[in-house]
Image (tube, rainbow, N blue to C red; front, side, top):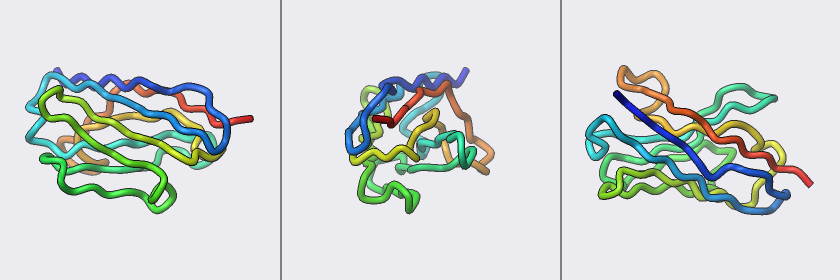
Length: 118
């Protein structure tokens, strides 16, 4: 059974930083591209970032480019999203996922709530 458990969310002021983590299990982690997505109150579900199976290729949505950084540890089967310069519009539930939305192997785990507010 695919399990993806995100953690690290919380309340942060605009301009602040958070580091999200995801622990994956139940599938061969090193074989899959991994991604982060979010569900925001204003825009609904959005893809945020992806990283290739070996960690050498990363992609970002334009609205987080330059502010967020995705990484993975293929020894610990974990995924990380470093979020800097956070904005109120980044508020939402963040999910880690296997693959990208639209792929046959896409699976999304439980999310973690990020609230950016003063």
